[in-house]
Amino acid sequence: SCVLFISSLFLGVGKTTLIQKVTQALKSSGISIDGFYTEEVREGGRRTGFDVVTLSGKRGPLSRVSSDSSTSRREYRVGQYVVDLVSFEQLVLPMLRNVNHGSDAEKKICVIDEIGKMELFSQPFIQAVRQTLTGSGTVVLGTIPIPKGKPLDLVEEIRSRKDVKVFN
Image (cartoon, rainbow, N blue to C red; front, side, top):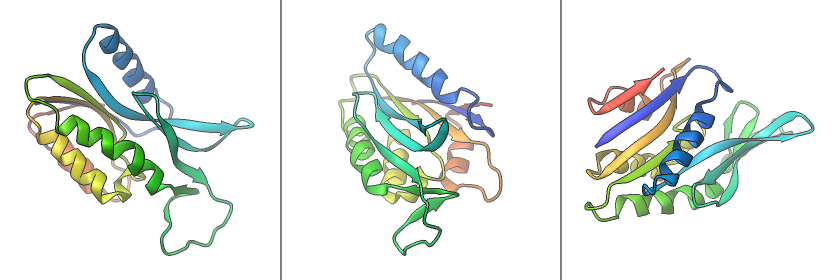
Protein backbone atom coordinates (compact mmCIF):
# COMPACT_ATOMS: atom_id res chain seq x y z
CA SER A 1 0.00 0.00 0.00
CA CYS A 2 1.03 3.61 -0.49
CA VAL A 3 0.63 5.88 2.49
CA LEU A 4 1.24 9.66 2.53
CA PHE A 5 0.84 11.81 5.62
CA ILE A 6 1.16 15.57 6.02
CA SER A 7 2.37 16.72 9.43
CA SER A 8 2.66 20.11 11.09
CA LEU A 9 3.06 21.46 14.59
CA PHE A 10 0.69 24.34 13.94
CA LEU A 11 -3.05 24.75 13.36
CA GLY A 12 -4.08 26.79 10.35
CA VAL A 13 -1.12 26.13 8.07
CA GLY A 14 -3.29 24.57 5.37
CA LYS A 15 -3.07 20.78 5.89
CA THR A 16 -6.82 20.32 5.39
CA THR A 17 -6.91 22.81 2.49
CA LEU A 18 -4.16 20.81 0.75
CA ILE A 19 -6.06 17.55 1.38
CA GLN A 20 -9.27 19.12 -0.04
CA LYS A 21 -7.51 20.36 -3.18
CA VAL A 22 -5.88 16.96 -3.81
CA THR A 23 -9.24 15.24 -3.17
CA GLN A 24 -11.04 17.48 -5.68
CA ALA A 25 -8.36 16.86 -8.31
CA LEU A 26 -8.52 13.07 -7.81
CA LYS A 27 -12.34 13.02 -7.87
CA SER A 28 -12.44 15.04 -11.09
CA SER A 29 -10.02 12.47 -12.61
CA GLY A 30 -12.58 9.77 -11.86
CA ILE A 31 -10.51 8.09 -9.14
CA SER A 32 -12.41 6.21 -6.40
CA ILE A 33 -11.88 8.16 -3.17
CA ASP A 34 -13.52 8.20 0.25
CA GLY A 35 -12.68 9.50 3.67
CA PHE A 36 -13.13 12.47 5.95
CA TYR A 37 -11.61 15.74 7.02
CA THR A 38 -12.06 17.94 10.06
CA GLU A 39 -13.24 21.51 9.68
CA GLU A 40 -13.14 24.42 12.09
CA VAL A 41 -16.51 25.71 13.31
CA ARG A 42 -16.63 29.45 13.99
CA GLU A 43 -19.25 31.66 15.56
CA GLY A 44 -18.83 35.41 15.76
CA GLY A 45 -15.22 35.19 14.62
CA ARG A 46 -14.07 32.71 17.27
CA ARG A 47 -13.50 28.99 16.99
CA THR A 48 -16.19 27.06 18.83
CA GLY A 49 -15.24 23.56 17.72
CA PHE A 50 -14.59 21.16 14.90
CA ASP A 51 -16.86 19.17 12.59
CA VAL A 52 -16.16 15.90 10.80
CA VAL A 53 -17.05 16.07 7.11
CA THR A 54 -17.10 12.90 5.01
CA LEU A 55 -16.24 13.03 1.31
CA SER A 56 -19.77 11.77 0.63
CA GLY A 57 -21.08 15.00 2.19
CA LYS A 58 -22.18 13.93 5.67
CA ARG A 59 -21.28 16.27 8.54
CA GLY A 60 -21.39 16.08 12.32
CA PRO A 61 -19.72 17.52 15.41
CA LEU A 62 -16.28 16.27 16.45
CA SER A 63 -15.93 18.71 19.34
CA ARG A 64 -17.31 21.89 20.83
CA VAL A 65 -16.07 24.41 23.37
CA SER A 66 -17.42 23.57 26.80
CA SER A 67 -18.38 26.35 29.17
CA ASP A 68 -18.47 23.84 32.03
CA SER A 69 -15.04 23.26 33.56
CA SER A 70 -16.11 20.20 35.56
CA THR A 71 -15.62 16.97 33.63
CA SER A 72 -18.05 14.12 33.86
CA ARG A 73 -16.66 10.60 33.89
CA ARG A 74 -17.63 9.88 30.31
CA GLU A 75 -16.45 13.15 28.84
CA TYR A 76 -13.44 13.26 26.53
CA ARG A 77 -11.62 16.60 26.49
CA VAL A 78 -8.78 18.27 24.65
CA GLY A 79 -8.14 21.67 26.18
CA GLN A 80 -11.38 23.65 26.10
CA TYR A 81 -13.06 21.19 23.71
CA VAL A 82 -15.39 18.33 24.60
CA VAL A 83 -15.18 15.53 22.03
CA ASP A 84 -18.41 14.03 20.68
CA LEU A 85 -17.20 10.46 20.28
CA VAL A 86 -20.62 9.07 19.29
CA SER A 87 -21.02 11.56 16.43
CA PHE A 88 -17.42 10.99 15.25
CA GLU A 89 -17.72 7.21 15.27
CA GLN A 90 -21.13 7.21 13.54
CA LEU A 91 -19.70 9.20 10.64
CA VAL A 92 -16.20 7.77 10.29
CA LEU A 93 -16.38 4.06 11.21
CA PRO A 94 -18.87 2.97 8.49
CA MET A 95 -16.77 4.78 5.87
CA LEU A 96 -13.52 3.12 7.04
CA ARG A 97 -15.18 -0.31 7.19
CA ASN A 98 -16.46 0.24 3.65
CA VAL A 99 -12.94 1.12 2.43
CA ASN A 100 -11.53 -1.94 4.21
CA HIS A 101 -14.09 -4.37 2.80
CA GLY A 102 -14.01 -3.31 -0.84
CA SER A 103 -12.61 -5.61 -3.52
CA ASP A 104 -8.81 -5.63 -3.86
CA ALA A 105 -9.19 -5.30 -7.64
CA GLU A 106 -10.28 -1.68 -7.29
CA LYS A 107 -7.59 0.74 -6.16
CA LYS A 108 -9.06 3.08 -3.58
CA ILE A 109 -7.82 6.25 -1.96
CA CYS A 110 -8.78 6.86 1.65
CA VAL A 111 -8.48 10.35 3.16
CA ILE A 112 -7.98 10.50 6.95
CA ASP A 113 -7.70 14.09 8.16
CA GLU A 114 -6.78 13.86 10.87
CA ILE A 115 -5.35 11.33 13.28
CA GLY A 116 -5.02 13.55 16.34
CA LYS A 117 -5.75 13.65 20.05
CA MET A 118 -9.52 14.06 19.65
CA GLU A 119 -9.90 11.21 17.18
CA LEU A 120 -7.67 8.89 19.22
CA PHE A 121 -10.14 8.73 22.11
CA SER A 122 -11.95 6.19 19.90
CA GLN A 123 -10.56 2.64 20.17
CA PRO A 124 -12.67 1.42 17.21
CA PHE A 125 -11.20 4.28 15.12
CA ILE A 126 -7.65 3.23 16.07
CA GLN A 127 -8.43 -0.37 15.01
CA ALA A 128 -10.05 0.76 11.75
CA VAL A 129 -7.05 2.99 10.88
CA ARG A 130 -4.63 0.10 11.53
CA GLN A 131 -6.76 -2.14 9.32
CA THR A 132 -6.85 0.50 6.56
CA LEU A 133 -3.06 0.90 6.67
CA THR A 134 -2.52 -2.84 6.29
CA GLY A 135 -5.11 -3.16 3.48
CA SER A 136 -3.32 -4.03 0.26
CA GLY A 137 -5.38 -2.10 -2.26
CA THR A 138 -5.73 1.16 -0.36
CA VAL A 139 -3.77 4.36 -0.83
CA VAL A 140 -4.03 6.49 2.31
CA LEU A 141 -3.69 10.26 2.30
CA GLY A 142 -3.84 11.73 5.79
CA THR A 143 -2.66 14.24 8.34
CA ILE A 144 -0.95 13.70 11.68
CA PRO A 145 0.33 16.18 14.27
CA ILE A 146 4.00 16.71 15.04
CA PRO A 147 4.47 15.47 18.62
CA LYS A 148 4.49 18.10 21.33
CA GLY A 149 4.29 16.80 24.87
CA LYS A 150 3.37 13.14 25.27
CA PRO A 151 3.66 11.26 21.95
CA LEU A 152 0.46 9.69 20.57
CA ASP A 153 1.03 5.95 20.12
CA LEU A 154 -0.79 5.48 16.79
CA VAL A 155 0.77 8.65 15.34
CA GLU A 156 4.28 7.44 16.20
CA GLU A 157 3.44 3.97 14.87
CA ILE A 158 2.37 5.56 11.56
CA ARG A 159 5.42 7.83 11.46
CA SER A 160 7.79 4.87 11.87
CA ARG A 161 6.17 2.60 9.25
CA LYS A 162 8.39 1.74 6.27
CA ASP A 163 5.52 2.19 3.79
CA VAL A 164 4.66 5.71 5.01
CA LYS A 165 5.99 8.95 3.57
CA VAL A 166 5.52 11.91 5.92
CA PHE A 167 5.73 15.48 4.59
CA ASN A 168 6.46 18.08 7.28
